[in-house]
Length: 472
Image (cartoon, one colour):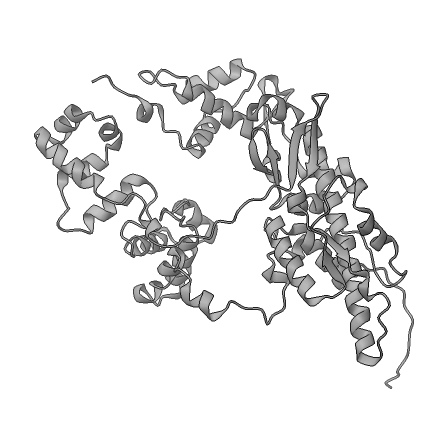
């Protein structure tokens, strides 16, 4: 027998309102994306207006008009939930939301913009896949590899590691790599300069030359103009070496730059760091990066009926919510920046080598928010300092144990120490990785030789043999 019943059940749950979703997106936006979004909102909402004459100060000293508009909000009309929730799965981590991502679906690039858009290198390479293969596995691998090709045309990934990660046969990965390296522009997909130039030589029958190919295996000798050793290795005369060297110089070391790259976006610092009259470091919000939006009180006495009343009510609530959310965003950035300033005080006094290990969790605990909030605040936000402009994420660095294991030092600091020691070395007798280990240990940093090699390569510093300059 089927019986219907009506039961009342209480459950605890966390519901994310549209207002809260948009507040989190605002928190993730860079200053440029936010400005574009605000301009769109002001065009569509008559209850918003720009206050270009106001100056941004610390959040606790916000313009009185803006605070008044927030304080006069009708109770119940605006939900002001905290943005401090762990919703990492709902948004792309590490990426700021663009203005377009929060715009309506009807928004699209104009025909003129599309028609004049320069083809990027990755678009050009992806368009060639269909001419190479219809094998779904190879197609997938080619797209994966193309995604790791930088603007100069170099493949910045270890194909052996990638093969293990994707669980594919090494032969299939090698096949995909060779297909990539056979694409236009010639030389694309190379892992280093020598391979890039070699691909170009081999693909041009007029340039193929055994001497030139041998020189490519000893580019360090060519850079040092050690023609005598090249002559001994190639067993040819000096004029043959010079001719082959000229052929190499005529090649393109960065073939990818023939095509458009990713659009570089300008950086507007959100935080300005300077010393006050007492010589203490202070962080202030950059007025240029903080949108100045107020409630337009000219419509307060507007009377509407029916559908018009619903429209007015919705737009007024949205305007009030937006002003409040922008204030909360500014406060979050301000608090996070000051926590970083306090925890990384030595960096501002002594430079990058004094950067301390710091995690999102430590900053989150200091300002009493969730880690995900700190992650969003530090994504796409920049701090202008006397040492340069840095993304807030720059100040977060993993720790490396020092001598005795009782202290730790930031990985970025170790890189800067390596860079300093190499810059001061005798180029006729460059420092080996083993020697760098000993010198760092003397400075209180105890790291393995493989770590030195890893950081040295990340800095683009060659091995000791590659750095050696032989007397002529």
